[in-house]
Amino acid sequence: MRDKLEYFSVVVFIFFIGLLPRFMIYRFLKFIAMALFRFEKRRSTLTLTNLRACYPKKSEVEIQKMAIDSYKSVAITLAEIILMLNDKIDLESMVENGDEFLKQIETYTKDAKNGVVIITAHFSNWELAAQYLPLHGYPMVAIGREGNNKLIEKNITTPFRQRYGNKNLYKKNALIGIVKALKRGKFVGLLFDQKAGGNDSVKVNFFNLPCDTTKSIAEMKLKLNPIILPIFFPRNRDGKYTPKVFEPVEYVADEVTETAEKIKKMTQKYNDILESVVRENPQQWFWMHNRWRLA
Image (tube, rainbow, N blue to C red; front, side):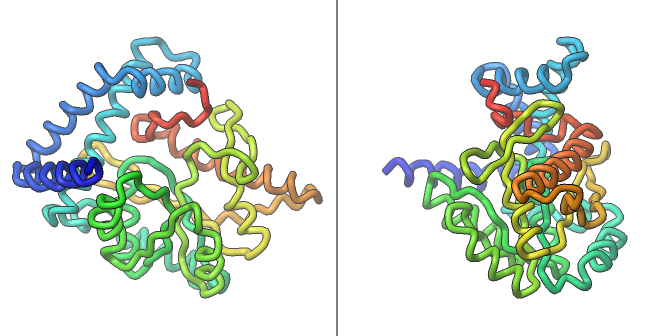
């Protein structure tokens, strides 16, 4: 019963919010975000704790502003997702320099006989990237966590993420699907900035702080040799997005021989790339994650 009530509530919310003018959707969700920041202390406290640890030289005023801006960024992303769900926003109008970006993708992946692993993060509007690439002929096997509500997952989340040809795979049973996709020369998409643990992770630095990070990207590179392609969609001041794609990461830590040390050094390389992106636009990253297990 609870799942049904949650699902019905989400459907109604998406529908009625979608009826509002676009500027009202953004304002309303920013209002909700500010209310959550003020009154939902567990998550806002974690956000502030993360920011203080990563930016120890910034004043408390600066930290508070960064946290608020991060919440507003998430609100913008949610507003755009609702607009996408209601088919009330044109993806092409959201992206600047799209042709140049797609040419880079073509250049970097044209010889991808072992497939492509796109690595990205909960940065800016991460769902836009997952929609824009398949829309332009680059569908991917997208790896993600299965939502707690099966009805929402089945009827909203999965159809949304697969609308242009993507295929969802849940982390729990993803390995076989990933290997099959890469062996067929396909694209696989991973958000690798969430906390990890156990045998699937390795401890490396992120913002000069140790954190458990998935080692699956490095393992795939060593075993299957796919192209590792970092892609991010930073948001501009005007609300549009200029995609950022790095050159394929070929680094396999040849300076060491032990596999575990190779994996650690390679994973550190991926974290360094993400950190460089976040440092350019720190307010656009999802600081609400318990990334370093500080709280």
